[in-house]
Image (tube, rainbow, N blue to C red; front, top):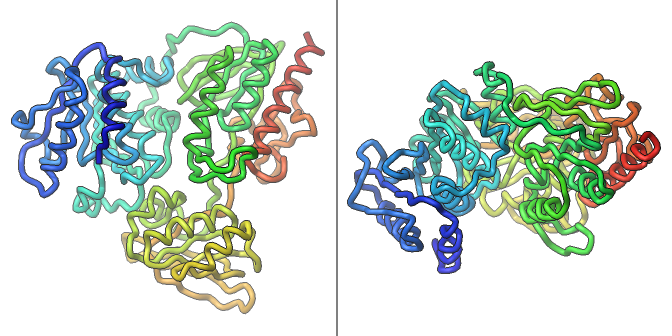
Length: 518
């Protein structure tokens, strides 16, 4: 599991630690305990700042769990399972941050988390193949470091199947707070804060975050469009702030990317990292892991208030808030999210190994999902509403070549049924004959496109009935000084290349506006 290159990397990173940490394992026996001990021993062997003694145990932990302590004090961070795969990064970050390395959270978020008075015990169920899970684990681990009243336990569902079954988990990340369901599926730091604020309204107490001077441009959204807009405006010498729940946005949920011009093959995480690196080349104030609560028009511009309580003024705004997965809107969908209804095949596919599943949607996302799932599950049925597939032919050809992928066209999904606790079938109507069919299965993966994240702009700028922000050829909205770009707008074809171009255009339009109204 741990090759020498990984261990060498840990050794290098540990040099930034300012205090030692210890990893303390639980007591008892388990068939994989020896593997966990070997795993921890090798990590500890990379640095004298990382301690581990297999003879020192915590009787309150399971034999497949370990906690991180520093200076004989619990950090509140527990890993249950062997955090390999995508979660290896979560472990290394937890070690480094507990050892004094600066946290990755926005200062406003840090201040807010420190003010939480109520005890919060999180349990985050993950699969090691889930690329959305580490973001949640890492965020909550940082919460634990910041506040002695907060704990977070990462639980590998593959090592604790009985616990997964007990809680009825069929999708990850699945977060429980103080024993009760808290969040399921993709959820970033900003969304976690929003959910906490719903339960603990006093978190919105007055912010002690330093206020910025009036900005020339505030870009809301950190995907390809928002990143491009921020870079283009910063290059013009403007005072620019970028507000984003995460740099990369929806791109981070994409696996292979083969159509980014000049780059034959990359992936979402790498592209997001490249965007972050490029942004750092410019004088851009980045407020990541936060969200915008409100936008108000004021004399000379606008006032933008964040969920941390911070509030700034700006002369212009560029909305690049992207989009989220579109739902089917049928009976049984919302009620069964996490119980067999899913939107991320990479995250939740492993839960349905050897079982029959369906993918609703015959576009690129749907066919890509089917291809990914085909290597894990017993059989995949793709249901497409139209009488033709919308996916690129190269993807369709790959799917047709798979023995365990069936494609049904002209199929209107009408209901998702359960056996009382989990999904057991999908009902669809043949749009050609009008006949209803029941498809027995264990999971439904919805891949039918995106819905614009335009909630923050409602009542501020003109939107279509579908929620897209209406823009002209220069990315101008109907409100002077407010521009929009990317998937949240009416621009056709929601593609990375197009979003980057639209973001660049919005940045240039904002600059032009400021020059003409200075």
